[in-house]
Length: 179
Image (cartoon, rainbow, N blue to C red):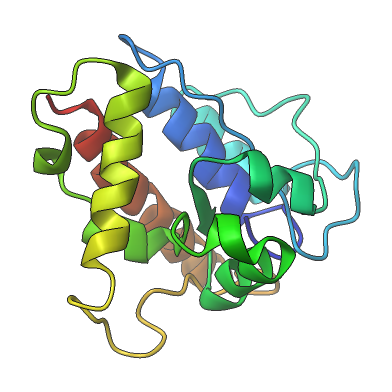
């Protein structure tokens, strides 16, 4: 999730879906924004970025984050700490152990947490549980886990943001697929 659900979270959602679409990973993915205006199309810059990677974002529209989304999720990834905190405010009991920033989860997830777990759902749960257990032991510098909002950024900053999200998604997908 991100703020407007136009740049960061739809990019991460679409790229992660592409990364996990092959094989046994039937993971349901969606994104939302903490302040999203429902029904807005993904930003043109993001759409172009995705199309160059073989992902068609057409038909994808923004949604506002709701408590039901957090409560039904096995994992909640926010672009920045403020988004993780928003998820926890909506559903404290459910989100405390399942909500991370995108970078935080990529830093904490380890494929070895699910070694020998064949069932995809159980494997995914083990990865999330392992990352949650590791939280606090591997601290990042303040702000290092946040993906800065690219809204209004110059083209070079925008591209850097999109590539940074792509790299993090690739690390997460690799941990999920390994095993």
